[in-house]
Length: 443
Image 1 (cartoon, rainbow, N blue to C red):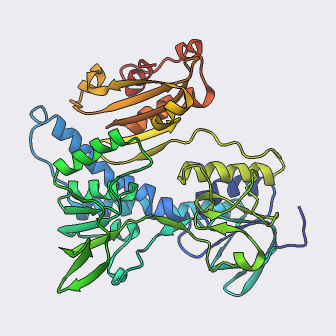
Image 2 (spheres, rainbow, N blue to C red):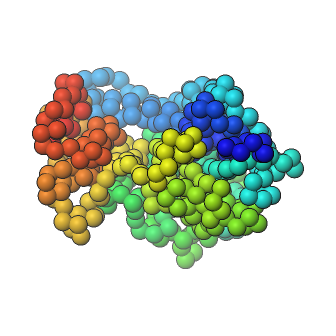
Image 3 (tube, rainbow, N blue to C red):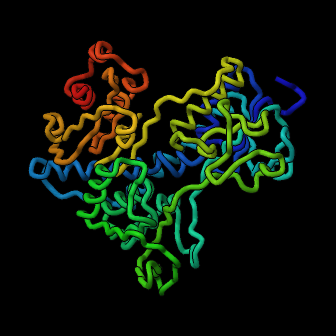
């Protein structure tokens, strides 16, 4: 690469869209810089996936002891303050660990806000940094409702930093953040109300299974208000009044705005240098190049069909490593990327969705999972899955609603990605007894 620049490759942002590929890229001899204005590692390690799953672990344990009540005696409850402290213990070392890996690879970590001056130059708090290629990996941020009193609401980062759990919580939105945090807060003892924009929850998942998730939460006391049309938040003494519908009011202690996440594309100079983007993110071609050919994008900031998830960002970052290091000049070819919502039970999917079956001519086999002997070990009483096969009986998609949905999808993922034949399926031998062997037996 060229040496008239400070770096061969400069990344804006230090999340999974950057560090998974930047570290091996630097080890390959490429001069790399990373600009970060917030915490090293980005959303996922610091106030996303890692924090969330740590808060979810006590919920999963609580649910299992409920199912085994009478065999396991005694009533358990979640101590929110200690759970939050445990979460902090788990994640607090991650920025230093990731930063250490970057520095050990010889990467310059530049703290500050990066803004494009031209196609090869980024200003970091006024100081110019130049590079032959630049990767925009600035991720997403929480969307905020544009209504009166919006400053009274909080985002997902705030929720996962609560040291004391409010008694009455309202969640505006019905996506995965809303459902996961409703699950966690309800299990920890909060009175939770979900105010929906429309009449559907988790619209990107198979709705009959979603209905079971909603029913389970409702049976545990979570209230759902459809077509809420929230219009304002108002401070009322020490509480917040939410105005919604025609003339309705709900008063709570704390409000979570979970109305989605939007790409960080503003105020970084994209307009000035001609990088095209839209409300869904930066537009890229099959090489992750933007409309300016030496500027690339990676991770959640991209406008793409693939799920905006950590595994997607890792795959893109690794793809760019191979491209910049000269190991590959091929266009990106995405694998099957699974998705999961960490409710309890969970809902997860990979490959062809159930909704696509009719128009594509696939065959669906459904299973009521409590009928499986292995699910009876811990008294699972609810759960279903849909296995989708093509005409040659290759597994092409799975959707599951169960306590073990995430593990089942991981188990079956190789069969979908590599289109295993019946003979190849027969060569797979899993540990027994395990959820892997149970899931594989269904094929």
